[in-house]
Image (cartoon, one colour):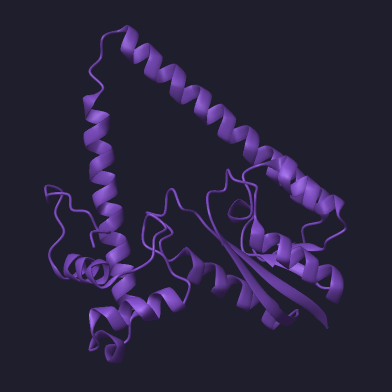
Length: 224
C-alpha cells in the first residue's frame, strides 16, 4: 500500500470558520488514508495561504522524496492560494493527493487551482468596483464595519460552541491552564491563529455558555 505524509496549513489571518480547521483537516485525511495506505508522518505550517515560505512543507517534501511517499492534503485551498506555488510542487515530482478529490490528476489539480485563483481575482475586482461606485454616489459605508463586527462576533460564538463540543467532560473539569495546554499540544489555534492561554480558554467557555444575541457587545477572545 502507498505511504502518505500529511500536510496541514492553518491560517494566521482568518480563522473564524476554521479555528478548529486543523482537526477537520486531520479527520478528512485520516478517512482517506484509512482505505488507501499508511500515514508515516504529519507536518503543519501555521501561516497565511498568501505566504509561500513553508518550513514544514519543505520538511515534508524532503521526507517524501526519501521515503518515496506521497503528500496528502485535505483540501486544495488549505494548501495554497497561488497556482504557481502548486505548479512548482508538482514540477518537483512529488506525488500530491487531495483527500477531497482523491482521483484528481496533477493536471486537474493545476486547473482547479488556476480557476480558484482567477475567481478570487475577479471577486476582488468586483468588490473594489462596487465600493468605488458606492463612494462616488456618496453612500455611507459605515454599515460595512458594523456588519463585519457582527460577523466576527458570530464567528467567535460559533468557534466557542465548536470548542466546547471538542472537549470531553473530564477535560472540562480541569483547570483553564490544563485545557489550554491540551489544545496547544493538539495543534489547535484560536480564531486568529494564536496559542491558547488560561484566560483565552476561560473567555471562550464563558462565551459558549451564555445566550448569543445580535446586540451582544464585542469582546476580545484572545485577551490574556
